[in-house]
Image (cartoon, rainbow, N blue to C red; front, side):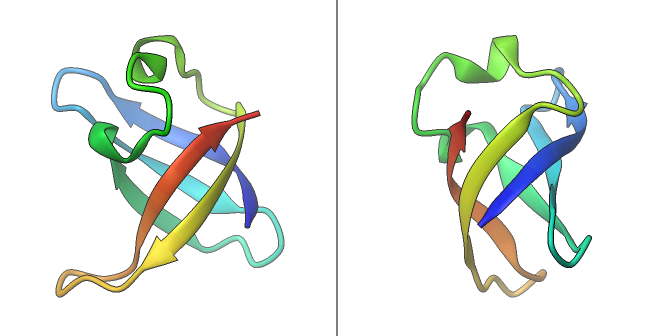
Length: 67
């Protein structure tokens, strides 16, 4: 799905992205970025593509690709 970065917590290594169709937010960990060093250059509002996966704490964004 397509979306954008809503919030980044650099010191803790995670963020949230928002699905552009539904507005639903998904947690992601820096390890889910397709490009390993992309976390340092992410900015809020940046466009991304991602898949989702179920997790006991709720759905998460996985395979996050910066566009």
